[in-house]
Image (cartoon, rainbow, N blue to C red; front, side, top):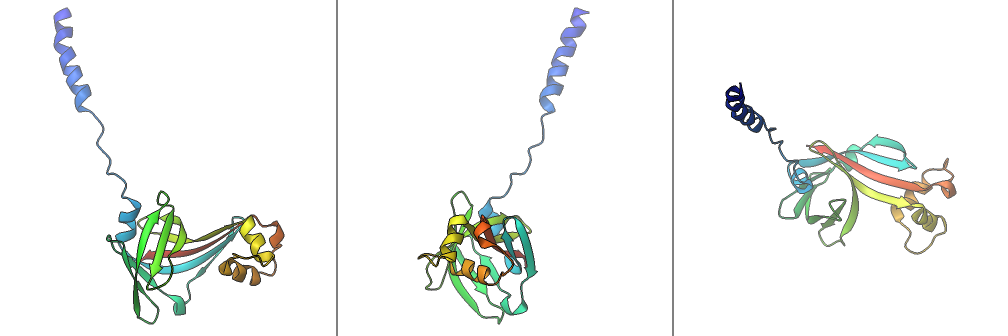
Amino acid sequence: MKFLRLLLLPGLLFAAVSCKKDKEDPKPSKAAQLTAVTWKASSLTIAVDNQSNTSPTPSSNQLSYKFNPDGKSVVTYSDGSTGTGTWVLQSNDSELVLQDGSSSPKTNKLFELTDKTLSFGESFDKSAIQKVLTNSPGASLNLGLIIAGSSGVTWQNVNSVQLKVNYVPK
């Protein structure tokens, strides 16, 4: 009986060692996902204290981005014209910095990036909202336009606003 156990022991060890889990494919990096396709604007989302409203991008504002692995980008506007620029992910891939032509770099919050969705834009906290409401220096023009176009909101009570442009693969 002892002899039989000794014969079975190596077989069991071999079976246990050979049954290791298959390695899963590593998740692609954010940069790889960003550069894998051309991204076409599909909608715009405005979220006020997590209450969001999404509208399709008007055909007059259709644009697409192609982000190249070398940090260069090409934007195609609704009229078919194109422009070039640069891009970089920063802050642990939570921000997308875009610079087109001769403009200053614009840092965008990266809300979502998968193989099927790209969403970036701006996020404003209560202090940014108060700057707009009091016409303080450094107030955001985009946030000012959102506030001006939203008459039914009591802005003094709002804690956060997000402005997201949503893209899908072209």
